[in-house]
Length: 400
Image (cartoon, rainbow, N blue to C red; front, side, top):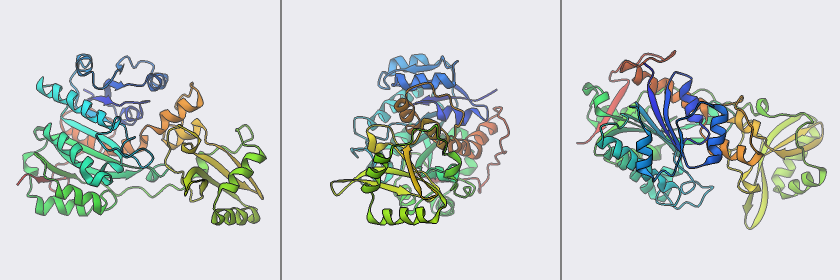
C-alpha cells in the first residue's frame, strides 16, 4: 500500500513531484491561485484532487479530504517573513495563512483523521526575523497538535546551482515513534544537534534548545550534504534564439554596476574566455544597482513582480557582453524539474517556479526521513534505505 499525503499551499506541485519519485500518492492538494493550479494540471493532468480554495474555508477543505493520509505538507507564503518581502512576520496578511492550515489540522485531529507526519517549509527568515517569535509561534502551534519536531536548513546549492536556503520543520506524533527513543534532552538530543552543523546553524540550534515544546524536539540522523554544485553554465542557454538585450540595454545595466563590478567585467572581457553569471537589480542608497555574481551559482529565484525581482543572465564571451532575463525553462532547471511543461505566459511561469520548492531537496528529505519512517510502518515505497530505529537514528528533547 502506497502512503498518501496532503499538499497544502501546493502551488505548481513541486513537493508532489519530489515525493512522487518514491511512490507517495497525493490525496488532496490545496492552493488559492488558479494560475498555479493551471500549471500544476499541465504537469499532472489527472490531479482531480487539486482544490483551489481559500485556506480559511475550513469546512469546505475538510469536506474534500476523503481518505486518510500519512503526511501533511505546507509551504505557506513567505512574503511576510522574507528579506525580499515586507517582514511583517507570521501574523502578516499572507504568512498568517499558516494558522488556516493549523485549524484544518485541528479539525482533522478532532475527527481522528490528522496525518501523523508533518513537513513545513519556508524561508530562513522564519527563525531569524522578529526576534525569533515567529519561529516559536509556528513550532508551538505544531507541537500543540501533538507533533514532536525537528528543524533544519537545507540550501538547494548542494543539489542544483541555485543559492536557496530553506527551513524545514518535520513533525511526527508519538504513536509512530518508538518509546525507546525518548531520551533526556541534555544528553542525546543536544549531542545529535551539534553533529549537524551543515543543517543547524548555531542560531537555529540555540532557538530550538531555548524553546520548550508541549511535546518535545527530535533529531534525525541526517547524512552529509552533497558538495555544492557550481555548474550554472549547465542550465543556461547560450544560443541566438534567446531574447538577448540590445546594446543600449546592456550599456545601461553596465552603468548600474559598482566600480568594482565594472572592473571585474573589463578583466573578463580582456581574458577572451567564456564567463556565465547572473544579475539582480537592487536599490542601494536610493539608486538602482545591477549586482552580478560569477561563482557558478544563481541567486535565489524570486517571483516576477517588477523587473528588480527577476533574475538576469550575463555572459562575457570573447570580449563581448550579452544580457537577458532568465527564461522559464532555466527557472525550471534551477528548481530541479527540467522537463516541466511550460504552456503559460512568461511571468506566470517565473512566479510559479520561484514560489516553489527545489525538487531534489524534497527527494533528499524523503529518502532520508519520510519514506524510511513510512516503510517502517508497513507502507510500500520504491528504493528507499531501511530505517533502523536506534539511539543513533533518532533522539529526543522531550519535556522535563
